[in-house]
Image (cartoon, rainbow, N blue to C red; front, side, top):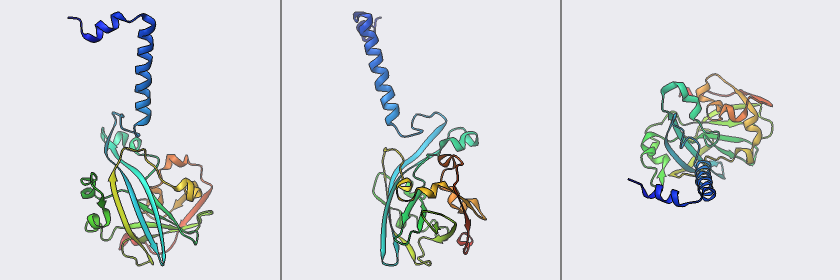
Length: 226
C-alpha cells in the first residue's frame, strides 16, 4: 500500500523534493540548536531545568540575582558523569558595593525539584533538608581574587543572609551573570581543604578551560564542619 507521504513524494519533481528535504533538515537543525544542552543527548537524562531568582542581604544592602540551571545526570552511570554538566547556571553570583563576590549553589533539594511547575519557595521548602550545609562562598575581590571563605547563607552568622530564593521550571538555555558582573571569578583557581565545599564545585572546570589568571587561597573558618 502506498502511504500518503510516498504518494506526495512521487508527485514532487526532484528539485522540489530536494527543497522539501532541505527545509525539513533546516527545521530539524534549528530545533536542535534551540533546545537546551543535553535535551537530545542519549547519554544524559535531564532531571530538571529551572530559573532561580534570589536576593542576598548584606547589612542594609539587598542584591538580586538570577540564573537558569540544568540538573542532568548520566544515563550510563559514572562513565559519562562529567559530560552532562552545563557550562552555566550552577552558581548564583552577587557582587556587593564593597567589591566582594558571593556565590551560592543553585541546585535545590529533591522536594523542590518535584514542585518546579509552581513558583517554589526554595528556602521554605529546603531548609529542613540542609540546616547545617547551606554553604556559600565569599571571594575577597571581584577584579583580582586572592582569598575565599565559606559562609552559611541561611544562618546570617556572617552578617550575610539569603532572604529570597524562588525556582520555577523553564526550557530556556542555562545562564548566569558571572561573565557580566565579575568575569575574573571564572578565571581563578580556588585552592582549599575540601573540593566539595569550594567554588571549584560550582564553577565548571571546562568553562574556564584551565586558563587561570588568578589563584585564591581559602581563609577563615570551615563552615562545612558545622
